[in-house]
Length: 562
Image (cartoon, rainbow, N blue to C red; front, side, top):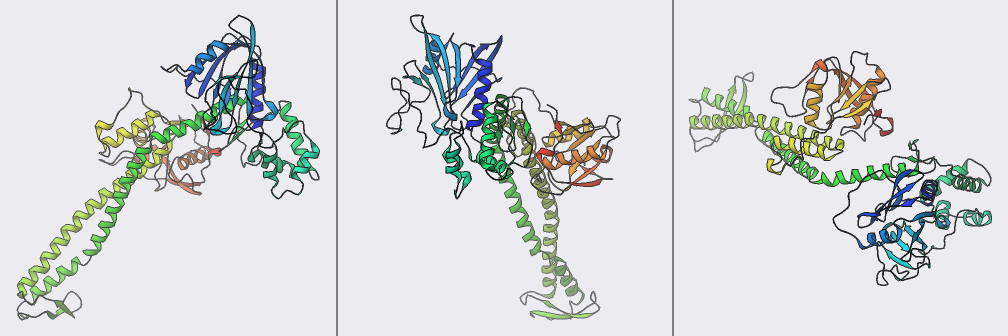
């Protein structure tokens, strides 16, 4: 979800209460489109992040440390010169637009205090950060916009600062009841009418207003709209991250409570850090996924060839049968015939017709059949070994693909690469591991306070199950579905049905059945799990198990221990 006007207003209120009167320290620019401004305020050090990145434009307080780049940006030098040592007078959001102005009193070249405005425009790919002087002229911007780029508005040093076009939208507060009724009465699409009429209202927020209004009867929509903005301007926020969204107000349109946060900055930092981490991991594992998919396709093609070959030799016993019958009746079969009818003593002496090559003698025909049988038999025996090896590869590759769902760090990726190298799927010289740092299994805690561990790859699954777990711990795995090994650590305590169901939820979630319902999960004591000699990483066999069926859902997972 883009940062809408309401969430942005919650950030502005947080920054106003935290940073007003604060002293600006040395501004840094870790990325071409990103600033971090250290501010000393109310006896504490704070860091303000502003980014005009097209995929995640925003501003909020941050706790993340970023190293300074080797390159020094001109915009950064300008900000240090004109904002360094300045005091924040106030922070505003004009008309609930997705624009924030940070007003800073700082000394000019003569030592006199002069007002500057650092403006961030959160407009997707048109986002920008602009420094404006006390006269309203642009001093510089993080992204220059010339007439060739935009015929609507130039953003260049020396030009007067003009806000982006409003697209005929108005401020939602103070609420103009007549205008609201004019916008919504008779509208074919009320949701669209609302977010097209007002600044800073996203389609999701418009849907939420409609949902709230439906519960309030006549004029409920106007009441809901007014009540929402009354909460906003009075700072009554409820910051939450939902499965695919975030908001500074509770969103009843989503079928979940969401995860609550104490401040909008904490919410935004968590959301974007997690999102960026997922994107970065997806980028770094793209080649592995492609490699695994290629090997899987190759294995499936082998399976198809093996099946076709088996079909071709399915009559191999008939070849041996014909050879034995010819041998038994060899003196009764004349030379040069194309077939012979004999009494089949293997089949209640029923008459059987045997095809023959008239150019061969009966003895040579018998040898031809025996030779064909022996060749087919050798092919069959070789196929059994090849098919078993191929099925083992498919099962293994499937388990590695399932493990990719659990990858959360570069250490995880390195371990998967190392494992694939050991199994011969990746050249060892291509495998690079930074340092000796090893990733750890995921750790959760059940409602009963028991630790639950989830392996993130096959090597980790082996370590978790075969070396870490005690014999009385409970082991879980999706039934005949690739996924993680899960261990409930009992430590002498009784393991309840609740803990088993919660662990089964984790086993289903960290498997290829994540998007399925009623997923079967087997569980047994660790002592009943063993690894066959020579088996691939992650492969075990088990017995004395029971099965529980669960539908995995992220919101129903037990608490994760970091």
